Amino acid sequence: MHMYPHNVWYVAALAREISATPLARRILGERLVLFRTASGNPVALADRCPHRQLPLSRGRVLGEHIQCGYHGAQFDAAGRCRLVPGQSEIPDHAAVRSCPVRERHGFIWIWMGDADLAAAADPAPICSFLDRGNWGTLDAYIHIACNYELINDNLADITHTEFVHPTTLGNESMRAARGELAPESSSIPRFEANLVDGGMNFRLSLTGTRPAPSFENAYRRVRGLKAGLALDFQLEFSFRAPAFWLFSPTAMKSGTPAAEGVSTSGLILITPEDRTSSHYFHKICQSYAPEVEAETRYWLDETCRAFDEDKVVLEAQQRNLECDAGDASAPVSFRGDWMGFQVRKLVRAMLAAESGQPRLLESGAAR
Ligand code: FES
Ligand SMILES: [Fe+2]
Image (cartoon, rainbow, N blue to C red; front, side, top):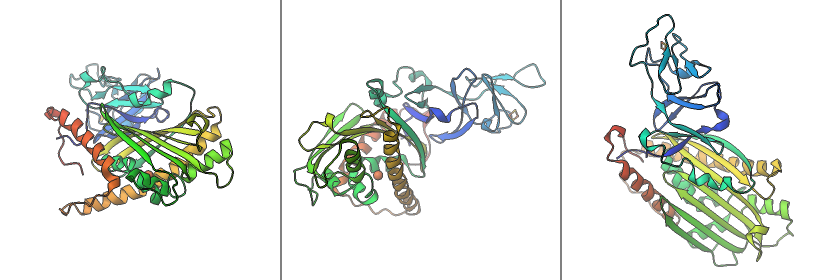
């Protein structure tokens, strides 16, 4: 079975990362060069000149071409060699792989699988909410040295937030995701999870509680909150295989509608770099004060702090998994892991659906 699904649009880069300066990035184990031509089009080519294998990312963009930094051969956006300095004929096989790319919602999306299937697939269904309403958005990129499925486990399990993010996104109220009352909670937690085509939707509702610090502080600042007053808290998230997440938390005064609360939406879009490392793209979106950049910046800062805390945990986990590769002992499971199991099943189903395409097979196994 493949290590990661190929026939899906992944995020290759934040749109603002791509310019006339070539960017080297590995995606699904393949070395690519990403750049923007003079006409503004993003391009993704194999990062290896077919002449003497210098990475094309060591070259420079000239108009609609990229020029190799060794002997000056030029390649167009389709990967065809268009010019060899000092000779008029161009060898037939002088070409590099070109991957389909699209620019949408502030991301550069890339298709690493069967190119014939790319046109019919939607690059960013999980981002479609951005087409409706007015949003203030900011984005960021983190490199995390762990397998992408460890990140899925992390995002599917909000019970870790109490321990990893106690100053931002977590507190004991998140124990409700295990169906357990938090010590200070005054209500029965309600949660529901529904499998949908290619993913899962989840919703957690708490009444009369103390949301985690980032949410409580935001509500206090934006709507005003008397000390000690309880809030209602609602968390919705959507997962779409293989590794796309949309989180929408809302803090509101107890008994009032969510529209009167403070709500954000956070996209987390993971692209495997290889078996043991991942690209983590995230975008924070808020519509309660879309024109106030300080509000959007607040959420970006809070989430960046929290995700850096996740990075420390995830990379330490991966290192342990690597050095215990021969240890056959089965990991212990807790009740909070059940959503992670559902997510792994959805990814397995996607991988199984692709397993009939041997030319995409890679060696090794996902952890
Ligand atoms: S290595 Fe690229 S032109 Fe020679
Ligand atoms: Fe986390």
